[in-house]
Amino acid sequence: MNDVYIAGVSMTHFGKHLERSLKELTEEALTAVLADAGCGARDIEAAFFGNCVQGHMEGQDMVRGEIALRACGLERIPVINVENACATASTAFHLAVNYIKAGAADVVLAIGVEKMYSTDKARMFSAFDGAWDVHNVAHSRDTLVSMGNGVEVPPGTTSDRPYSVFMDVYAGLSRLHMKTFGTTRRQLAAIAAKNHQHSTLNPRSQYQRPFTIDEVLAAQPIAYPLTIPMCSPVSDGAAAALVCSANGLKRLNANAKRTKRVLASALQTGSQREPDDYAQHASRLAADKAYAQAGLGPRDMSVAEVHDATAMGEIIEVEALQLCALGDCGPAAERGELSIGGRIPVNPSGGLESKGHPIGATGLGQIYELVTQLREEAGARQVSNARIGIAQNGGGIIGVEEAVVCVTVIGA
Image (cartoon, rainbow, N blue to C red; front, side, top):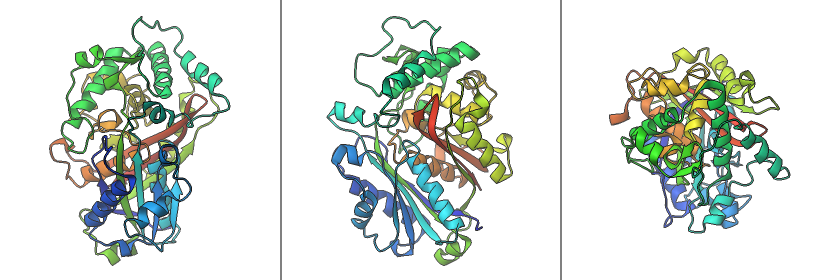
């Protein structure tokens, strides 16, 4: 099987782009990734196009990628539409990597694009409603929320404003972790404050305002113990990566110093398990596969981008990647170990909490950050001596965990 390399990456500004169309965001990401790789659209032999909610928001189904990419002048190639909940973009990347490994092409585009923000808030938040079993909603919600039973919910700590139902899920997971490991609300706030501080150094972040731990704790509540700065926003944006075989790199005459190698890409669906069976967590299983593929372990990682749809999400995923022991991620955040300059910087981009979370583009936004770090092109947020990066991107809910997880390892 062929080695796979990343010749180019791109990412638009994540945020609220009411005035821009999905086609415009696609064109911006495509133009930028081609410029980064130093090639033209004619060099692309296949494309994997990630998107989740255009059908829900605009009624465009079935041929989203063919339509968006043709508007950018990219046609007459295989276009594969990818939808896999919040793991959509990393799944598109995973499929592009394996397309190269199979020898089906030498230069392949993975691109994720999302237009989620709307003035119609009910429509906007209902876009998330299909990311779990729609035939079993009440049971699923009750099961997940009840995981936090035994932790008192103070009055006035649940928002009366519309928000995604998944914030209730994360609240239940948060209270379970607090009950099991002694994780504190202040530790959750420490993670959120860290990510918001990182985002001030990222010009492509949706939010660039710093928060102190006390400001995070005092912010408007969502669902206990979560406050608004602990939660990812609704976002628009696009990101892309151009992946190549060794022959593809030669054909593109790619810059060897800026080219990075894909050491592992593991895609894992969840399973029926008990909430406290952490060894069988989908992210843990995906991480184990990725480490085995790369011939590396958690201690070899220099930098990580993880799916922090909430601050508790970061705790769960960092521990599943074994970058911290179970129960130690919160204390590690308080000690500064997960900050830029710390033992293992996590989400130097600002993460989903602050960089933004356009769900069909999120995973490729993580790839963009890791490649930028490994190239030593991250400017003020640069992680020192970044040599190997790991990304974890999860999506949907089945049972007590994500429906799907993708873990990627990239080397300098």
